[in-house]
Length: 77
Image (cartoon, rainbow, N blue to C red; front, side):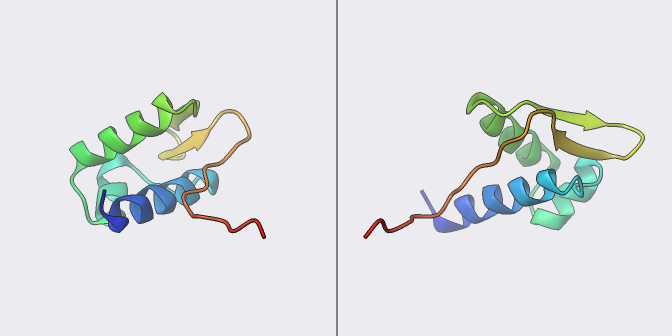
């Protein structure tokens, strides 16, 4: 799987945590992908256990439960 895929998921995670995604169209522009790809990425994160919701008044996705993803390798010693 290409590295940019994980970079985009990491960036999406960061935007969701800050409640700064904007609408799906705006988010697609921020990540330089299609709106359909945004829905696929959200689905991937949800399938991994994230309870992601959308606030229409703030126009942003957010995690309804505290948590995060870490898409980087961490050395342990």
